[in-house]
Image (cartoon, one colour):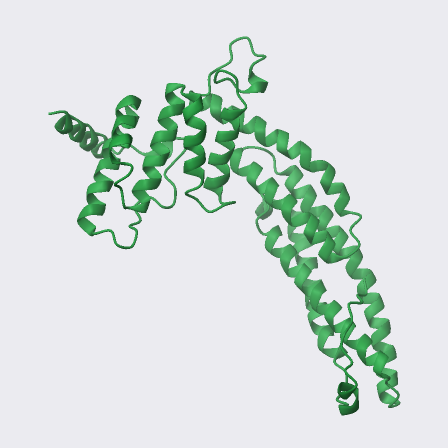
Length: 334
């Protein structure tokens, strides 16, 4: 009889078009995906069980959900169902105010996603918020006269915004360090993790201004332009000297080695620009940011110059040169 009642609730909820759009934590991308080796009837049965639990969640039957989780979690084979069950368990613990159980539950849910993905970042942050809260109230909210508990979705959303803001503040000092980078590779080694951390902050609080994210991209683009200007000047000068030596048949082994170094420099500069463009394409608000479009176009132009210059530094054939074992060194021209 109980099973019948649950099934009826599930059917009514689904027929009414109850959507996850109203839920702040929608099902992950694994939902509905069968794992290899799971028969179709078994997968359908497991998804039906998940649908019943979703319906229970909609009407606040968190204890019933946790009883269902305990009964089926070790036998479920469908990967999408596993993810949804982990989510329903974590959220039920949070809704009940079972903070000590909610934290590891969110961590288990987090680990079902690829590290660094939006879902991983979101659930990891929720676990952090709950772990650092006292009696279900996030630290910065405790000073309020009537703080809301994190069992309320709005309170959790506000806590994630505060966490994102705090992370952004810590990142700002690192943006300045990019301006002192001595090579494009060093600059990208600094910028890439900063850009990803700012992207993660945007995942937690999509409504936040992209100003810091865009400032970091602008600083990176400007530093690449400065390094590129110096590099192109040096490479152009060296190219002229090499061409004169080749024309006079006086190109030395050291010069040939130097040419290979210049070629490596061009290739590395082009790779740095490509990496910058890939990161820039993920910056928040890029489509409506004129400066972002400008620095990307400049990066594309620089990369084209480096790509065109690289083959021009190929030394002319000379068998005695290779017989002497001349190989490129690690000298770069920035």
